Length: 428
Image (cartoon, rainbow, N blue to C red):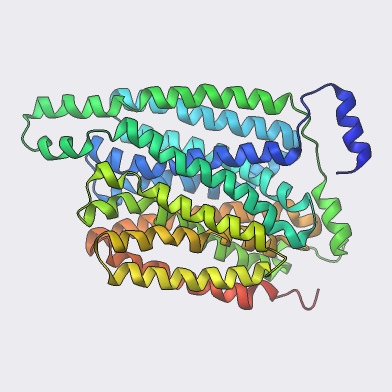
C-alpha cells in the first residue's frame, strides 16, 4: 500500500488499522470457529447418540460449504468489494452460530449440521477475500512468512477454542457416558437434553461477538486492493492466458490443498476420540486438540523466522511432507499416550503446508487470481470428505489403523513440493 493511499485513509476519519491487523483478527475468527468442531464431534456423538461415521458429519457439514461457496464467494466479492464482503461473511458465520440454539433446544442433529454449513459458508467468503489479500500485501517471496503470521492468529484461537468449549460442554462427559446405559429411557432423554442445552450460551455469545466484529470491519478503513492488476503487472501475464485451465500448477495445487486440509482436520478433530480409544478419559483427552494446535504454532514460528531467510517455501513443503509421513507411521506403530503425542505432532508437520502451497499455486495467475483463489478455497472441502473417510475406516477397522490413509496424502504433497508446483511454469 502506497503513501498516497495511506494518507487518503487517514483523511477519511474512519477507524484506521493496518490491513494485516484486521486480517489477523479474521484469521483468529477462522481458527476459533473451525476448531470448535473438534469438541463438537465427541459432544454430539454423545448428545445425539452417533457412531464415528455419523459424528464426522460435523466436519463434513462445515467444510463441504467451501466446495459449494468457493466460486459464489468470488462473485460476491466482485459485487461488494473486500470490506463489505468480509462484513457479510462474518454475518453468515453469526447466522450459523445462531442456529445452534434451536438445534440444542430440540436436540436435532440435522439443524446442528445446517448451522455448521452456514458457518462454513461465511468462513468461505472470509477465506476467499483474506488469503489473496495477505499474499499480495508484500513480496511474493515472503508470502509464506506473512501467512505464517496469520497462522499464529489462527492457531492461538484454535488452541483456545477446544479448551473453552470443552470445559463447558464436556465437563462431566465421562460420568454421563458410563451411566447412560443404566438409566430408564425417559431419564436418559432428560440427561441428553441437559447435555445438548449446554451449547446454547456459548453460541449465543459467539453470535453477538461476530455481529459486533462485522460492524467494526464495515466501518473500518480497510482498503480495496485490485489484486488482479497488481498480479498481472508482476507476472507479465496480460492477455497471454485465456483460461484458468492453462495453469496446471494451480490445478495440481487445488488437488494438493484438498489433501492437505483433509489430513490437517483429521489430526485435529480425531485426536480427542483417539485419546479415548487409547484409554485416556475424555476429561483429559478433550485438551488434545489444543496440543495439536500448539505444535502448529511452533511450525508457524519456524516459518516466520526461517522463510525466506534460511530456506524457501518449497523446502518447507518438502520437509513438512516428510515429517508428516514419519509422525503418522510412529502414531500407528506405538500405543497409549505416545501414539497420541505423535498424532498431535502432525500439527507441526501440517503447519507450513498451507503457507507454502497457497503462494506456490497462486503465483502468476494475473487476471485469474480471483477465480484461482476461489478454486483453492473450494479445495478446503477436502476437510469435509477425508475426515468422513477416516470415520468410516475407524468404524470398520479401528481409529489407529485409520491413520494409514494420511500417508498417501503426504506423499502427494511431497510431489507438489518437488515437481508439481513447477508444471506449466517453464513455458509461461
